[in-house]
Amino acid sequence: MRNGSICLQKRKAELAAMSPEERDIAALDDIKIAESRVVEMYNRIDDFSDENKRKIALALKAYWKAYRKWEIRK
Image 1 (cartoon, rainbow, N blue to C red):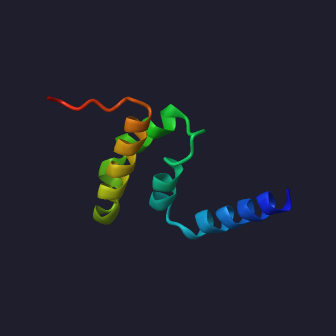
Image 2: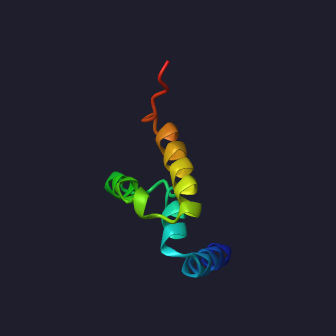
C-alpha cells in the first residue's frame, strides 16, 4: 500500500507542476475521465497555445480511437 501512496503523491506533484493545458492533455490518459470533460476540452481546442493544439488533438484522437468513437473516412 505504501508504494501506491508514493506513486499517488508523485503523480499529484507532476500534475501540480503542469500548466492547465498540459493537465488537460494528461487527463485524457485517465480511464475515469467523464465524456463531458472530453467534449469540453474539444470545444476549447482553439484556446490552447499553438504548441499544445497538436498535442491535445492527438490525445483526443487517441482517446476516441480507444473508445471506438473515431471513424476513418474511406
